[in-house]
Length: 514
Image 1 (spheres, rainbow, N blue to C red):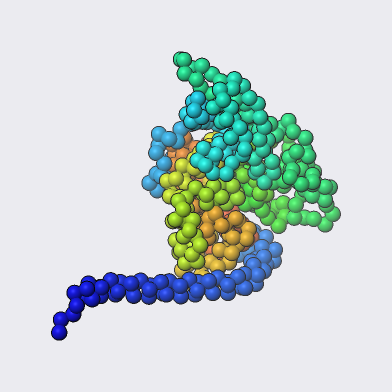
Image 2 (cartoon, one colour):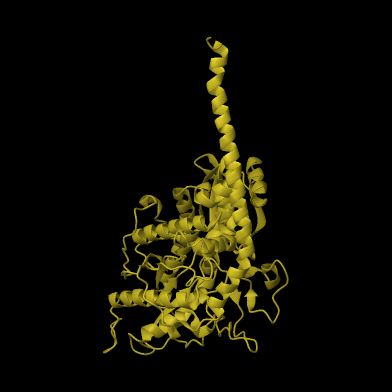
């Protein structure tokens, strides 16, 4: 007997539906397994965190350890034109005119609108510019932009306003709108200016001003000068408010002075002498005359390239020959990740709810590599280019470094779970999804820096390219144990030596490079 035609036509459809049901059940099972794994990892986090703390505070200083040579390291030169991977950025989009860099350095942003309120162009200080661009894309931003655009549509001649953004602490701007006549066409110019240096100290904190027991003058921006408390060897500041010993001023004749800037990955260490700049200084003293090369620690915990740019005059006041930047993690995690989280299509926001998709495809749930690179160019690296522009006006060179992160083997599951939870709890990882995505974002950050450095002739120190180490060297996603600092400072000492040789600084007799 033949099957009924309608029944035959339904049969393949039913098979597809049954297959989809089984796939759905399998997906739910996998999600449950991954949720269970995450729950177990959460329970184990505190124990692993305690062990990592012991590596930092229980280890001997870096120089007292017998650290085995890292087999992954192949020494590379600190070449101005160091060749990295294929460029992400369009070379034509990298160069920024000097007058724009001057605006950035002064904390000034300019935007131009037509009479309908359409943004025609913008340039200058990136923090306020990015807030404006968020408003233009319908994302959360300061209310001042709605007020200004309404004034444009109302054809107002002039308007003044204020707005406050955050870098952990408030940043205040004076914003003005002025109507312009351009060949008979109406244009409206908006100028925003950072006015924090005009504000009282109380206006630079969301809470109370730090008291005498706190090292902070302004949180995550500047330490107090000559701060110390009894029995505290972990943090003491000098007459400039940096975590270093007293600095001779004016700079002694014949001394080459390197000023290291960055966040906690620059200033970290159990004592002043255990920070990476001071360890590098001692290693360079083994190659050059004693006291010939000074390496000053001008890092500040929690800071970012916006704050470094805003206080760059403090670094220049130290009379450096070279300013060395190592950092970026505070930009990518605490500042930029929330915008990346908001700017992706809706399906990516929905996909982030999946345990499996977050764990194994987290980087793909962020904007694409080219978009991330362009955003970094327009924010972090614009700040860095403005700083280098200012440094060179004072006869000072500035070099950038790639940023290192832990390298894990596929079987280092416990460490990966630890770094995932550390990302979420400490580093605003809900924006970067997980540790694996953070590593890929850092790769984009480093590659973007290489592209810009090569185009603009910025000295580039390939630190991350030579640093392949895991949990014994990294306390968390970026901070290092003494063992990690030993390796990091070996790399820095070699790169700086190579750079100084190219500048004509020769080794002292009998002091050869290892």
